Length: 363
Image (cartoon, rainbow, N blue to C red):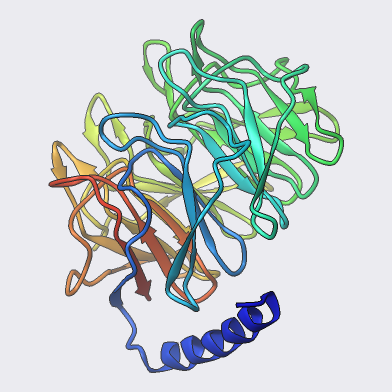
């Protein structure tokens, strides 16, 4: 099939899918085509038309393969492994608008290598290691519109509080300042505000933290986030950006798992508690997406119990609505989820087994 024919079919399929979407009831799960090798600790990004899944762990070995899922066609396309980064899990991935950049990962010692994947050409280009941050895993990465910022994590030398800005146009790295930076950590979260990166929480030496920092890449400076009114310290939680505030929720600590969170306003440097009334059960290793008006959390792990429950959080009303369990995927954790603009896509994870199934949730 020629590319022009494929595009025509996709346009027809997209129109059909949008028409179907208007008929699908709210709060509905649908199982879609199964994806590549079952896995956990992988990454997933949304390109605007496809979800790209890459890397991870299949229960026996790390992976350096992946696949692209087209919801309009309900089909998967394998990605080339020619020139791909070495197999890894606990890495990060960002979407630039034209390419996916994966970097780091590879516990227990970590890697400082990565690659840029072009889905239009199905090709990989290596990221330079010249001036790159030290090898690590359990770090975070955000896309600024120009650069990828990686920060924090764990490597052969232990926890770190440094990072770098990667410019794909120049294939070059610039070091992130450590002066004023948050303490070294892993399993934290990071969001991009449009101007700054906000990192928060995670595992630090001696336990968990509820501290964080705001990084301005233009000035290469850090400003601490207040701990006054902040949620209790935690790791393996989630964080999303609403357009003007960051919402953190769930996660775990020495006290167990949490079903609370907070809304952080960087303009005021202040926190507002997320209600626990009708909130989903406490959990960690779950996923969260932002729909434009609500945060959807789903799945995860609660004291050795896998979950297939979730909730929609409305920050305007500070209220929760449960996601249905009717027709929902099997309970799982360490899966991935993306928001398409219409619905949430869920792929992979582990529960009673390792999964390679794909699901869509229409809120």
